[in-house]
Length: 165
Length: 246
Picture 1: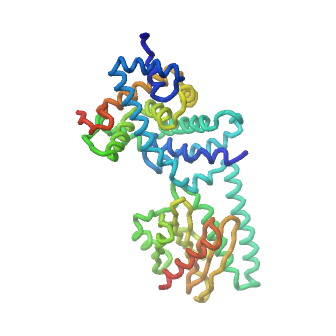
Picture 2: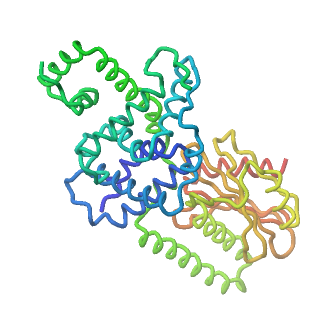
Picture 3: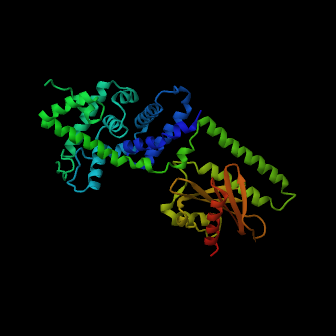
């Protein structure tokens, strides 16, 4: 078994975990749990198949199980966020913060789909396999998530964001 | 113009369409400014999310993540390291009657064992974190019966993570942990020595993958451990020594 195969993917696993849970240390713990699971199940991976998608699947399962079992603190913090929480901002840095807040206001189901499509740039078929949901569900979650983000962000793109009440 | 499926519009945003299909969608969007505005907003969401999180790719991967191995293998390996160190320790204790150098050598092994046990820890590397440094140093000083100092290694790129109290062959031991930007960790292991106060020169010991520089200064022994090259560790050890003996 070649460790380098998995190690190569660690930066992208960290990126996805960070986007998913927000907190750096919680995210790295998720990556560590994912790597341990991956090593122990490595014999199940078919050489030649998409290792990255396989690793994302493991991370998804670890994340969902942990969230179900003891709910990440981050999830609780998220629930306390008001549903609509975008301030009027100017400048790119603040806009990025707003995007992050809006991302956290999405349900975990929607957030996973948006991140796998937008940040990880998986195809819809890959997302469907990774999350083990039908492609129609991928599309409906993607559509709802994007529309919600658009509304919360005011839909004005690079223009100063509108205050949403 | 035949209506386009919403899925096609998303695929357009995500670059998943053939040239032909793309041209069709573009024609649709020209005729439907509301959809065009939505797709522009979605594309921008993609770009914003990427610019938020792509920076994670450039961060150095923490050493603790690189150190993840198959669980069985890791258990076996940690156990093997500790077993090997124990064997060596047993042999040295036997040799104690022969050579007075026993304590410092076994001391390096104890330090290396403690390093191997705690340095890979992601969740609980220390008992008291560096943000409570005053409490940490006060507490460990009290337990070791001396005034300790946590050396400042920031100029060498190592920040204090925190510390913990351990039990060693000679009683309580203080362990300070440091980490650099790449997640490389060093530990400083301090314990009271048996016998008359004395001073020794720096000694170096390679304990499996762990390099250790150790020395005795009066009543206390110090060991600096890390999975780094001897030269790099020596540089840090010298700074530690100078700060503790101004």
